[in-house]
Image (cartoon, rainbow, N blue to C red; front, side, top):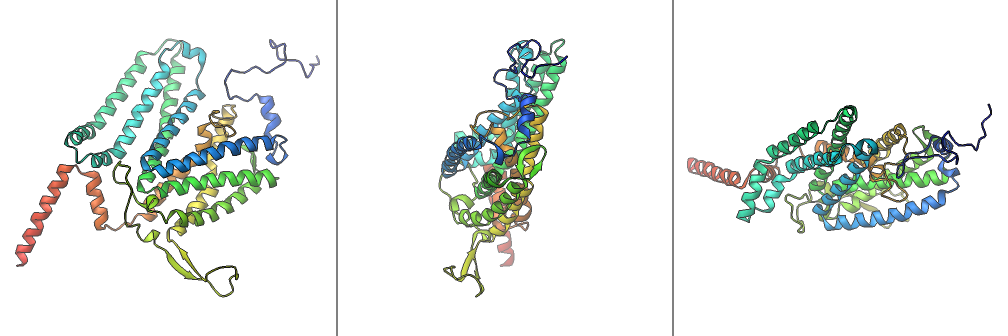
Length: 424
């Protein structure tokens, strides 16, 4: 029997494809029709480019303002991004019909989320919080108590959520509930693992957060525009609109940008100094040899349009080249992973919170990979391995309570006195 191409599926006389309201799910027919089109051949590409450019300008402007405000505001931005990402990922496997029979089940997801947040950030920032309130005796005692009982508090919150989950189990819903439980924990691992490294980068110096994040943004923008105007050769089947032209053009642009941006960012103490507490005051520190310029004389055959034969290069710029290489070649695989993930769930985007870009998770896929690498690279190749007086003092300040610091001071004084009298 011949079926008319305009006829609808059984039960849908209008011929329109029905889908869940508010869903990002892409009908198979539409996905098949659009999946093989390169961006260079997309008829609506200029409209989507304008929408994307408009939202990008707002995001970059807001990001620059938050960077200017400092470490705590950047941390707050990371927390907001985490909440948006968790919301999008929680909704990915949500089924409205089952949820109606499980009142409060969504609340349990957020209970685990904020418990994980308290544990991760409490572990990372507790001593910095102590350093902030050292001069106030009441706050110091309060914070010290929190630090002491932080782990048991987090465990109590987690085990109460575990008991809550067990008590809400319902017959014929076991499979859905346990899959949601496992999905929730996977989300927490993904979101908080990368964010922990991100926050660590921030307090090591905004430079180590700002440069990697900027390189991912530059790579994404460059890949879009190179693919927009020159893209002809498909790069990977998981992302049909990505092209080799976009990938190569973005790689070259990102590596050059890494070298130049490191020179600009490395000249501001606000960006290079680490933050040892949770205050918002201005920072003043010795930037270290990485951020002190070295001068090189250019050979005579260099073009005459160079105003000076001597150029200043910060040593950190050589490290930036490797960060740029990773951001342009390895980090995009985070985007490919996300593309495959979305195809598995038959959705176009994780959300619609950013016009022209999709959801917050769509913007953070490559950033997650880059943040982890930036932290590991910094700890492995940038932080000096030999102990210095400054490093020892940092460890004392960050890891010991005020009383323990006094004890170290007293003991050190006794040792110095004994050696002085022994020599005399």
